[in-house]
Image (cartoon, rainbow, N blue to C red; front, top):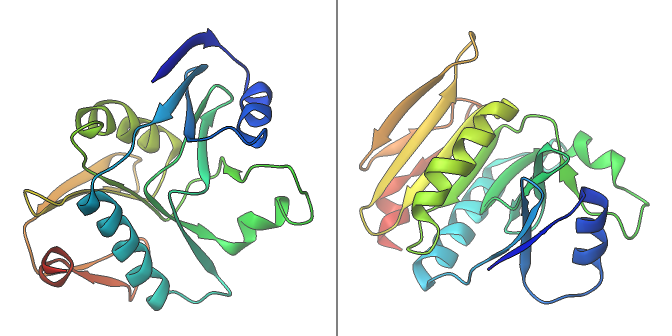
Length: 187
């Protein structure tokens, strides 16, 4: 559900922190509620987050599932389904109750899981914004087609797109971290 009135990021933060129900994003100054998701969407988000968290050094990274936010500009704030955040980025938010964790700096990995209600929007709108932010690796998992589309940032700033239909995928931005797609899609 989109709310027609445009708002600033400060007003957005106040709204979200007021205790209002729902997961809210800010799309170019317009408040939008993230719709509820299917079992497969929630389960896949959780599983990817868990598998990443089990492989990453907690001193260096945190994994968020439908929790923290990214910022492209002051009027665009998204809640990725899964994101990997360097722990150093969290320093700006520690000891500041009442402040949302909204990250502006590029992230090693941002993941969106396809859902019927947001599938086209994620690809057409959110993924280009993640690329503009300079996120190093962007994934779109499709639990029904059993595919992973990966966009990996190249040294010249462009993105290489690859579609995986199974097997073990090594993350380009997080050396030594892998996800077994066959196992993920079979859970």
